[in-house]
Image 1 (tube, rainbow, N blue to C red):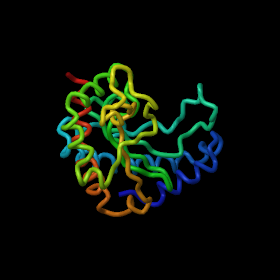
Image 2: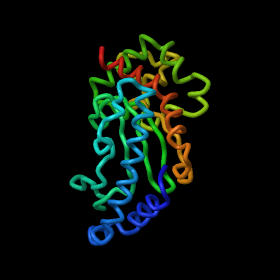
Image 3: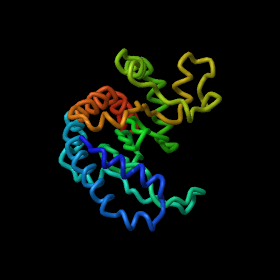
Length: 220
């Protein structure tokens, strides 16, 4: 679990997102980061029990994203993220494959998984797999416990049917998707309870069939 100090640091950083403040409070950042890394090390072992392609003994430093923002092409010039982002995947290459995510941010934490905005070649393969095996896909995303906890995001969906697909297809809603991720919000207090790792493991266990389906689609 995590202490209040992690969330207190992130909240303070959000209010003082500048290099001068960060330099003065660097020790607090290092303490918060150390807590997160220790937490992630435990979580990785739990995720590895859910998904055999996840290495539970991998270096947690490779799963926790950098707090430093790339501001070169952004209007927002804040130098730091106000969250800790954690990514688990089979190859560990950021987000360019299906996997699992954890977002730690005061008032905006969530657990997630799937494949966010796959590039065109992967998107084409995923749509083909959904079209060919729609019954298998629906069995995953419409399964009772999955549907109770999660819902596929439609934020980035196409307005019209993708090229080559019938607009009247009863499953066209799934084929319009450009992103295949689900998420569930978490209260800050949940991270401060001993059962948080088991709770996250339970969520990833439900997400795993979706990750496996997407992984299979792009690995054929």
